[in-house]
Image (tube, rainbow, N blue to C red; front, side):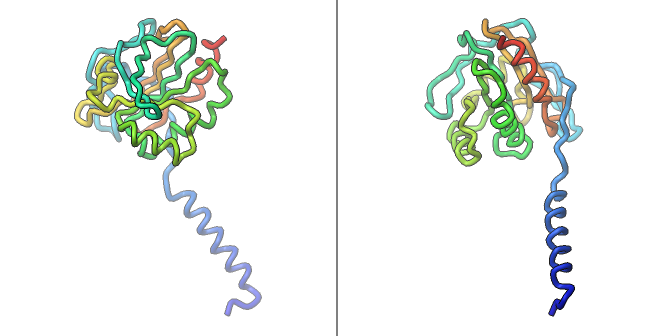
Length: 206
């Protein structure tokens, strides 16, 4: 029997469990630096090439069809006008860092103006993206899939050699369809600087 010390012992056990769970996963680092599209990124220190034709600030988006996960309709971002596009590009939606990045976009991004379109792009199938959106209750952002040939990755310089996934990135396109901001996270296990991207999107939305 625990006796009079029972509540104290139980409280101690609960605190251990709470803090033990809280520290079971290391905190994901945020990276303010940027690699260059078409150059290299790292995954836990291992350098990997980025394949394809790199986009750059001041250029338009490539004419590439992505698939909308909710409607299965083709979407060509190079033709979108009148809205600021905040593109959150992730390797795979079902991994921890990608999930956190997408939650940040969906939850913290509610403060963005209405003419900023929040879009997640990955090479996951549209079905996987749709399932994630519903399970995570993040249906307030658009999900576009590059699952077919990886053409979006190839024509932005964001296709990772070997895995053939997309490099973790943020790209912001202005209302005239011109790229105004790029961050390619140098270490793919880190998060991009979402707040700095939000600030740029707000500036462009005015």
